[in-house]
Image 1 (spheres, rainbow, N blue to C red):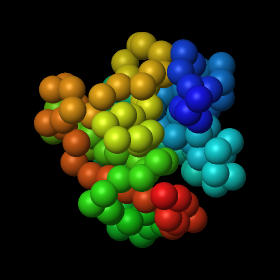
Image 2 (tube, rainbow, N blue to C red):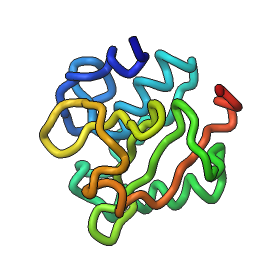
Image 3 (tube, rainbow, N blue to C red):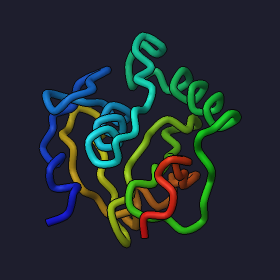
Length: 137
């Protein structure tokens, strides 16, 4: 059983940061805290909703400039995958293995999806590793 199976089915909830409900960043926060003991900032109140893609893109741009994330070419488990939604980089998934990511999108629940699916393959714009995650391969 993969670590990702524990998160499949968590319902979508704007600004959610628990098993009761998450948005895509909340799911990353939850996974990092429970699986890696890494506390990510919650950004509570720093964006209105996941639909406010420009605000989310601004937060991502600010974090990219100062770390603790570094862009990598080859993903490993727990790397964050950054996707473009429209013109904004505003959706985050978590790399599971090979062609799979864990994510939560729209009003759906957390699920594992294929990175090569047409919806996601063309939108991937970066793979990021947290400094504390190191090499987990």
